[in-house]
Length: 202
Length: 166
Image 1 (cartoon, rainbow over the protein chains, first blue to last red):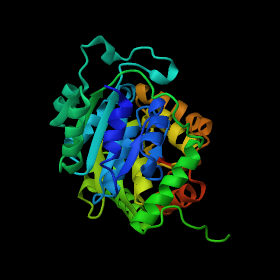
Image 2: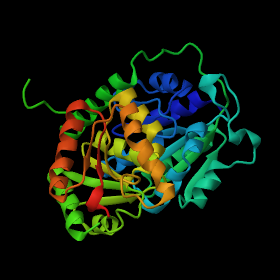
Image 3: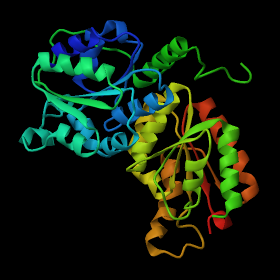
Image 4: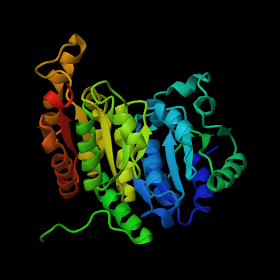
């Protein structure tokens, strides 16, 4: 299963959602696969922070669906967030874990899931995220997207994907600081709120 | 920590507009945690480590609400990576309230390194901070921490020490 194909499948289902995603090859793939979601996606480079940040966003905007696009390496960096999700039971958080069994952005050395013994969905279920599954085909993934985007409990799908990056895709040029501003302005506009307002004096 | 100091923290959170508190409990702030849990209008989230709490607070910032990370100062060390990534890399601020373990008066050997490392770690991350040892300064210090964090879009920290926590 190719990650890019899954992204295209997911992107076609998104309208008003907010997305937080991880570092590495998935950044440029998502940038290309979901052009209508660019300003609604927080592109970050924070191993271990993606799902916690997405959860924080979901806490602050309980009426809004938040999608976390995490990775095997990123989730393994901070498995504790699964226990927090299990206890807190956010009703508006859909987590996708792109599990390519490698640290792709640094050339592909294996993560712990490459052994075949480490099952992230099973860990999630054990942590209290009962709706946690593994998808191995695009069709399975699509079904979990439909369920996860409509769920009223935390929903997690581990997408077992190959290590290839979609060739010839457009590279994102902005850094994390610019991406934050773009994302915050999108949240401000779509929610009618001020997050980063003016100083007392200009 | 006396009830009056707990009350000042809660008053500071209210004055600063904080509606979410992430915490990993410690002994010096022991009465603060159930008080926060019981505070109307404040959602508390217990976390498995302080770095996870920092990242959740960063996400809350992006939603337009205000969060605080409450912890022992040893949690600062556990938070360094997410704080560096979010703060230095993206300008996503986290405001922290820490108990000051390991300062003068510390009577636990294991807590001494907490004091040894706290201020150098804050300095290494260029995080502005204030050590508060007088109860009367708690409320305004919390408000000040949010003012600066939301002007700089960078982290700030308050460490409560001295007679406030002993």
